[in-house]
Length: 261
Picture (cartoon, rainbow, N blue to C red):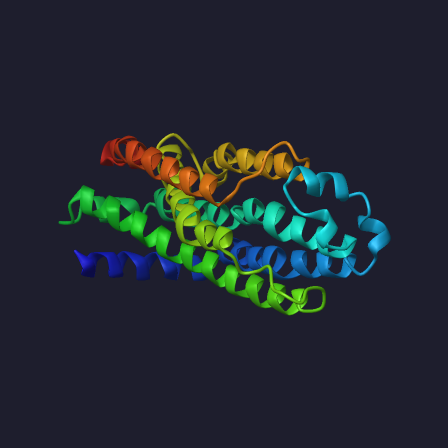
């Protein structure tokens, strides 16, 4: 079984690396989210006049405004409240692109028939395909976080005597919520692939996941609510439970009759 997973993983990676329309967005994402965004905010923090309206919002979020200056408040708000949920777009988009290529792409290229009519059990192929999409998607997430951590740890040294990053909230986000939401995106893509005519049509379904994440980011940015560490733990648990339920629906859609028509 492990051998099958490795074969499928290598096969799917070969397809991804051979298609610039797939790997280029996955290369651009880490650069934008993990390097450009944090760098821009560290530069903005150099101009305190542009951050002096954050006091009220910081108080709503539970930040001790008397302990920090305007530049520090901006960075705490961005890196502890806005960026964590925004960062979830990386595992979502990476997983959806890979799963779309793996499931819909193979059907478009008429290569799925070869796999379906091979001696491999459909269930084993289904699980191997999920594995083949999840591993590289999560690898992109970890790589992005490493880049983000390097930029953030260097930048915060210019503003803080004591580091605010990394922290437990980010650890929960990367090690718990990100894997859960990656699998969720893959399962949604599998279910969508059975009803989609092409890769682009299947990708449109991923907006169902992206929009709530953007809403969470906006909600925190406006002070409507906060996603603390405990909330993220519960959120990850809920997503894993939903994944378990979706797994049956996804497996039911992964049948030869639906995939080759």
